[in-house]
Image 1 (cartoon, rainbow, N blue to C red):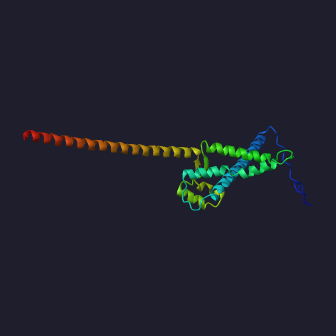
Image 2 (image 1 turned 30 degrees about the vertical axis):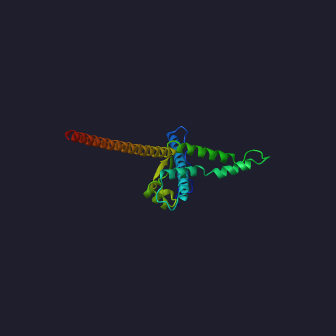
Image 3 (image 1 turned 90 degrees about the vertical axis):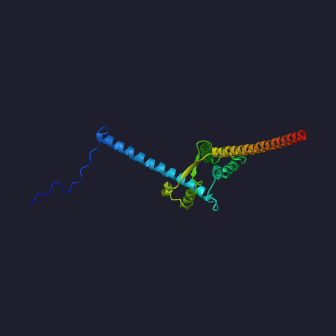
Length: 221
């Protein structure tokens, strides 16, 4: 009679518990931290890209189909409009909370988030600049118009920072140009005055020469 295989019919031996202070335990702990960090980074990136995509879609919807290029002033006007996009919602929240007899404040968390967002965006716009699609460049504007909203195509879009300082700079340039034009006008007037004086002096000199010749002829006679 053949001998029975002693290993048959037995379950797999359970894995040994990892000692909490062993090298393997330290490795597993580091690996878990790495995976958590990687997952958090992916989530943060997805949230950031989603926010950027939402902002760009807002600007795309506001584009004038008749315009082939935007000026710096046009870009600043669009940013100002973007900063006011929550005005209606804030008014509705204020109206609901203004009802007499209501206890507590409705939508307080939403209101706080909106105000913080607008405050942050306003600070960027009045500081280093608020990032928007580059609609000032005709080629980049066309690329932005053709964008379908695919977040994977975001690297193909050119962005630029817009600040209200652009308007101030433009106004200064216009003032300088006006001053330059005024100076040119003043110079033209001065040149005209100089020319008149020279012509008058020439006429006076001619008259003096003619009178002198006339006196000589009289003396000779």
